[in-house]
Structure formats: C-alpha cells, structure tokens
Length: 449
Image 1 (cartoon, one colour):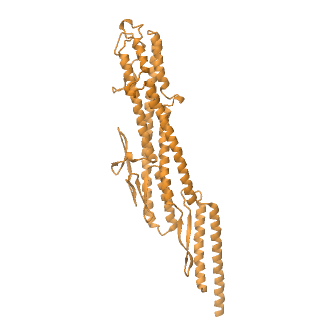
Image 2: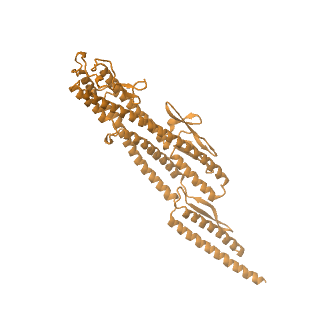
Image 3: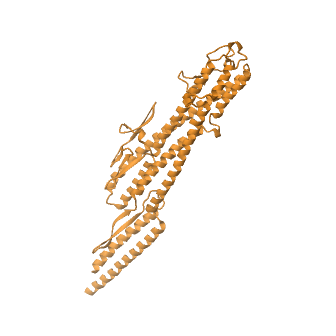
C-alpha cells in the first residue's frame, strides 16, 4: 500500500472510530432514558479505504415489542377495570358497614316489637326510622353508582382525547422519518419516539401494528379500524345518551370492539356498574312491591286500608333511584288484618315479617336477604377476586417481557465502557498511523529536495 493509501485508510478509520465513540457516549448518556434502545455501529472493510461505518444499528426486536404491546394492553385494561370494580365493591362491603344486609335484617326485626304490642307508638316509630334508614342507604348506594359512572365517562373522554393526540404524533413521526432516513442518529431517535408512543397508545386501546418496509407504521384497532395510515391519523369520537356511551371510528360504532387498554377497562367497568345497578333496582322494586302489597292488605290505627309503605318521588315505578317512605305517621303502619281490633291485631304485621323468609321468582327464587347476599354482595366480591388473579398473572407476564426487552435493547454500562475503551484505542492507533505516515511523507519529500 502506498503512503497516500495508508493515510487514506487511517483517516477513514479515525472517522469510523469517532462514530463508535460518539455512539457509545450517546448510549451511556441515555442509560436511564425510558424507551431508549441502545445503538451500535456496523463496521465494514472497504478495499482501498479501510474500515468504514455502514450504519448505526438500533438494537431492537420487533417480536418482543409486539408481545410487550399486547401484554401492556391486557395489564392496563385489568388495572382500569379493577379500579372501577373496587369502587363498586366498596358500596356493598359488609365488613366496612357500607352494605345493606344488616339494615335489611333490621327492617324485619324491628317489626317484631310492633307484632308484640300493635298499639305501641314508639315501636311503630322505631320501625319507620329503620325503614327510612333502609331507603336512605339504597338511595345513597344508587347515587354512588351513578357517580362512579359519571367519573368513568369523564375518564373515558380524557383517554380518547389522549389516543387522538398520540395518533397525530405517530403520523408526524412517520412523516419526519422520511425526511431523516439518511441520518441514522436522527432516524433512530424517531424510532425510539415512535415506540414510546406505540407503547403508551397500547395502554389505552388494543392496537395492531403493521410495519412498512421503510420502518414507518400503520396502526389499527384490534378489529381493523385505522388509527394511523402513514402520515394521516384518524380520530376516535365519543357520544353519550340514555343508553350509555358509544365510541365511533369514522362514524362506525366500535364500542364493543374494545377488549384491551384503558378504554376496554372503562367500557367493561361501565357495563359492570350497569349490571349491579340493574340488580339493585330488581331487588328494590321487588322488595317495595311485595311489602306494599302486604301493607295495603292491612289496616292502620285510623282504620285505613290500601296504604302503601313505599312510593317513588317522581311518579315512575319504584326502583333504587326514586324509592321513598310513603308514610311518616307511626299510626299509619298497617299492623292489623281485622278492622275490629286495630289496637291488638298483629296478623298483617306478622305477614309482612314472613316476607323476609319467602322466596320470589323475580329474585331467582331467593329471599330478599339471599338475593342481596349472593347476587349482589358476593357476586361483586367474586368478580373482583377473579380480576385480581388475572391482574397478578398479567403483571408477571408484563414484567417478564419488559425484562427481556431491557436485556436486549437496554444499555449495559459495563459493556459500553469496554466498547468506549476499544474505540478510543483504535482511534489512537489510527491517529498514530496518520502521524507516522505524515513523518514518512515529509522524509520522502525531503529526499526529493
């Protein structure tokens, strides 16, 4: 090799090793940067020119990342769903004193004192007080369920807004990637930013990612509705009416398509709140109907009959949202069945007490207490436990795949320091070759003179 050829090869080596040093320093500086994928220079021997850097490779596994996106969506859905379930469960938690079991039992137990002494005004007043407490507890529970729904719908709107922001950002990244495709450093930065956005998006909505040959992406919902197409984004929209919330993509209702992410968790949670509202309404309407039928069959101390114990405050059929106590006067409690013995007959009040043990077709052939305990209180507890188990398994899987991604793409500071030393020594060697070659050229030129 001629002296000028040696100088050219050494100069090229200097440039290549400098890229290696710069790349390694960038890795070290980003050791704690979330979502950063380490980079490594790819060297190649070029005849007559020595070693060159073909490109700066980003260490990344598409297969691992797709698994990460999927598990992240599952985990986020379960966490969001559990948050809503936990709020619902707290409303029916007997150990915290927020359930209805105790007050249901008190309702029927308080009638025993009336049965013992039908003309005892204090016993009647005590019963009405317990009945009012039951009504108040039911109304509070229903109001709390409605508040959970309202808060969840507001959260859903915020999440959809964030989804739309992220899809716009991904479209911008796709556009910029074409501009900087010949600049490996900037191009890799956009790839990292893209994957951070995709991971965040997967925590909100279940997505499918299609990688294009130029490394740009297309993003779809799980059922194939587009979110990002190259440099275009498509917004999700939400509406709310009497039937609940709906999410649309390009005018198509895709509410039931969401299974993962925060949107899936919120929609599942809203369905669960509605389910327990319906169960509570079923219990309340059946309870009020059966008690009213029996109470209307009796006579109060005024000799009146056909008087309801419960009514609604809006003229609609009685449910958990509108139930009120229809009487305030203790003398209007219909304890007697025989109008001739208003002060001593307790037959009707005993019949009301007996309702507590009866089973009703409207309540799946269960009593009032049994339906509440099994279909409401125990049911929400079992649902929460099931989600807890699924969430724990999901957390384990997510942590495992995150660890694999970190092992592959994360920065190992010890390894980078070794690489830095290697590139520095190679740089020094190339610099030495340049120096020696320069000295030889000066010697040759001196001989010519």
